[in-house]
Image 1 (spheres, helix red, strand yellow):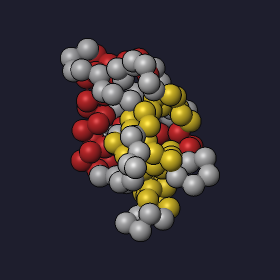
Image 2 (image 1 turned 180 degrees about the horizontal axis):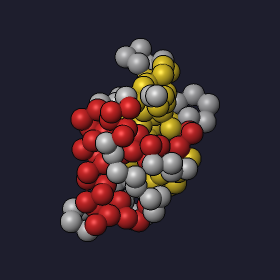
Image 3 (image 1 turned 45 degrees about the horizontal axis):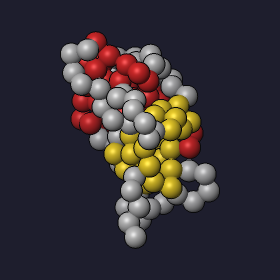
Length: 122
């Protein structure tokens, strides 16, 4: 059985993204404790996962993010910054940086994740 989320295609349209079972089954579960994985300083907000849309997804990136997050939780690697997002239509946000981190959060059953809004171009 595969796990399906939504991602943006090259035309900016939502389309299903499938996480293959062999990728998902090889990942460590990550308890939802944001302070273990993220450098939580001023300027971030916690966004529900159902409001976030991946802009890309790569199996290797998903595996690497899982290892990096586990290492950050163990204190053997620095914590990462909150994921970067920008607004989409409605109440959704596109993930600009941290797509693999978001997918790991989803696969681990998280409900929310720390985010920073990407600077807008004027």
